[in-house]
Length: 256
Image (tube, rainbow, N blue to C red; front, side):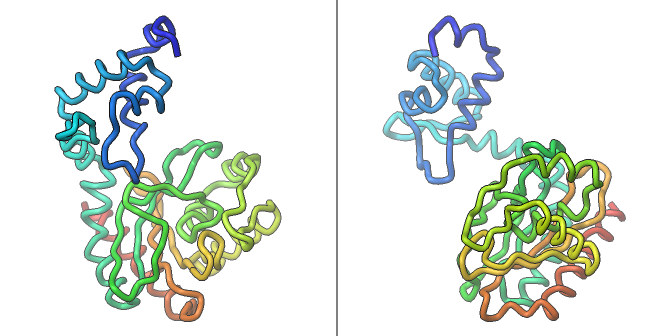
């Protein structure tokens, strides 16, 4: 991107691109890294990074690089998914972990737009006997290959789903369901029994079982789920547990 093009772009848009340039595997990024990832000239990237650091949105490292700032984290903790959803959900998530011994997480719909929506993970509890998963706090995964994602899809109106199914779905594993008819059948099944499942559709050997919360004013659609190994995936036991957790979280949020 040229200096003229960078100047024509709004400063907020450039700053947002700088902040979103960071990934989960980045300990820090240099101004040159930020310029490369955003397409901004190095001088512009360095100036913006310095300004963002001055505002606490980025932090400087000893070697002159930049990391996501604690000031940005502080502001993020004021979001309703933290202040309301996660705080009310955590006691129930912990109880679900104690009852299941498996990974437990909360995910929300990342966007109301069916063309771009994903499952955004906002809470997670794991333990020494839990199976490794790809999910992390603040991470995103596809709706069609995750238990929480299918649970969120089961909450949508048919018009929204019609738009969603215009997308092209990537196959995360050989077991991923990417065709519209079987995906619709999966959603119908989830609606009928009250919880959704995926079997090795996101990660080989893993099974996810999840239930959605009813819509709550001021919050995106949310779902709670467990991830277990295929060899110990007892849906008859875990299904009612996640349904009860979703119900109890929704009850507490309704009292707020």
